[in-house]
Length: 308
Image 1 (cartoon, one colour):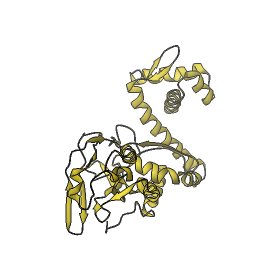
Image 2 (cartoon, rainbow, N blue to C red):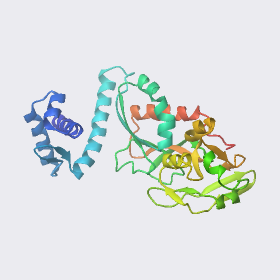
Image 3 (cartoon, one colour):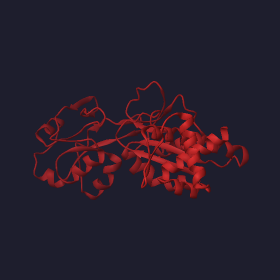
Image 4 (tube, rainbow, N blue to C red):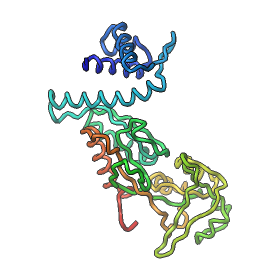
């Protein structure tokens, strides 16, 4: 019975992925009637409808989407268990679902990802890149690289790095604006502010120079909820904003952007690796987590440094 349930789960997950019973049957090497029977049995046992079926399209219901995420994690665990017993212990395989801030994804993880995939070719990564704080348990996420202080007591938190920022603007904008020699000069400029996507609250910049601390409590004339959009707005000459040093580095080198108040440090954001207490950290998740932590530790733009 358990084996039939697993087969039904595999059939259902494959239908969701390919969008049709026929394509799922072909990829699984099963007759279409068998795949259809598996799903019908699964729906009957669960007492819910998992799929919307029309003549042109198959899609998951709300319950089906939630079931898919959990079923996929269970199947990956089963695959890993079988691999550990039957095959070499050096093989690590399965799906890892991760969430991370977009600058971490585009500037750190993606450029180094070919090395990880060479080391672990049997791991399938599902990477979410967003400024939103996701619910790991509800959304079936194995682990996340999260910026800021982690308040959720249901998460295991491992600090692994820092996200550093700088104030920037384009030469064109600065050539037509008043000079900036101290933080209070920022109040006479067009300031582009960041709003958190979930709460809608504006992020308050904190500048430090030795024992001096200055908070930039200025309304934005433009509000954006994405760091890359803020950077693009700065490049377009729309005003002053902050950017991660990792994203701004190449533009500062070419002169497309200029750093403002370079003798003041912006408060950096801690980056932590988090995962639920209730979730076993499988080998496939652990190897990715350790790789990401080492990657961040070895990069001066991201490593933890008590002096910054």
